[in-house]
Length: 527
Image (cartoon, rainbow, N blue to C red; front, top):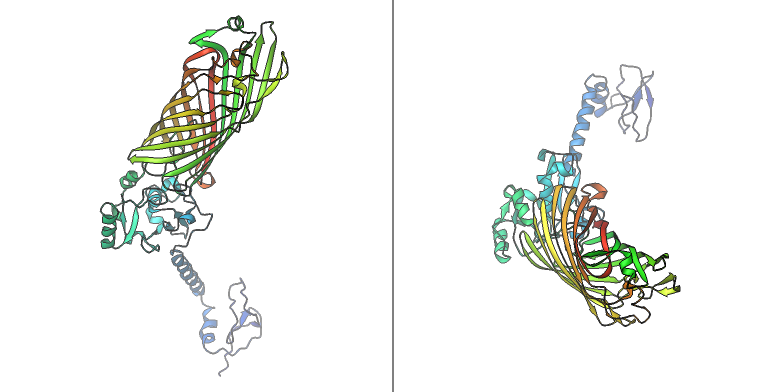
């Protein structure tokens, strides 16, 4: 081996597999040493050493370093173009669902910087692709390196531009109506014939109009821009979907009415010893919805109620009674009966369970711990049927609907009476101004009957609220609502909404307290 002596001063230092940031240092191998500027260096440098050490003295050595970094960086980006599987916490940026639950429909967009975005179906991937500026700072398709969809037959990811998409088939995706990705034209045409789909489309043939056709009431009905917060049981969810909700409801009633005429307290006291003057009712409602199948959604509601009623006696004594506690627990099944874009029809079938007290008591001038009249009780004391029908219509930026619900009392409670049946008919129209803001206008009408039977602990001659034959009536309310919907990040699929209004018509079998105004506020979260 020929000994090679560098023509410059240096000092030999031995390093074991370590890098130094100073320019002009290199990794020691069996044939290399790492040097720094100082005297006395000799070294046998066969092979790479014969050209490497002189090279590092040249001005173009930094260029070699830059080329090396560029090559390795490009290789890293190229590798990142391969899609990975979504994790359990990865959510679709369009609908907010957890993507990993729907592995047979996963779709992925890979950006030039290596970022990967996951979707629970091709439909939401196209929604995102056609409106990038809404969901990401990247506003150009040029920022996308690749789009991938899960092929229907193999359940493997393929390039979306190699797939044929079948729409209108009887195969629902995670979000209802879906584009079904098939590899190969013949297989796609066969699938379309077997499942009632339309002619297969290539990637470039899918347009925003195509997605709009799928995005109707036959699809998953999202909250926000749909029914007002005061309407319950007017949408279904995709299979496996959940919704948690909280509502706060307030009603203020002041002054008495008989028929459509207002009554002064003096007129009421001409026939009764005590007259109610004002009543407030607050309700906190926790709700839970879950969809076990495409067409069936289950709903449960747990209320907590607090009421106060002010009174005046013939002697001019004023007093207030209060009651609070859990109300009647309600369970409902929502079944998707019919869809024909843009119209949809739902069946509501529910039960109300007698978990609310019908034995509430408070202190009055007549004595302590006295049984309170019917309006101050927290429940019905009976199992009640809650049947109904809901219609929903929807186009881009607008939605409308109507719902008829009934409360049918079954049997007699333990205090020997049955509350009157109730029918409620409501209709609404909603305008979505931007993706996170919508407003609504609703008209709500209710009819309810008198009480059948009587609680033996109540004296109907003392106060009209204890008279079972003075509880019927009907009312029409006008209500306005506003909804704010989260569209990005951790707020996606969260909604805050408020709706308030007042009666425009009341006809009461009184004397009864008339309703002055109503307010409902709430939060909803779909996941």
